[in-house]
Image (cartoon, rainbow, N blue to C red; front, top):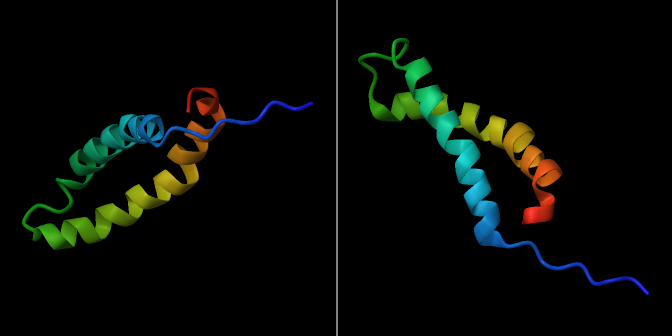
Length: 72
């Protein structure tokens, strides 16, 4: 007989994602600031958001699922 798997907690997953994304966003802002000085905010975001999304989809979320899955 197999034991039923429990459903992952969305709140815990959100907390893990926050812990991964916050430093990524902060580092990206600091890295892009000298290159985008004088740009409007929408122009900075047009560069920053794809970088963050790609890092999340291919880096942060798979890492969380692989390494932290037992806590979700």
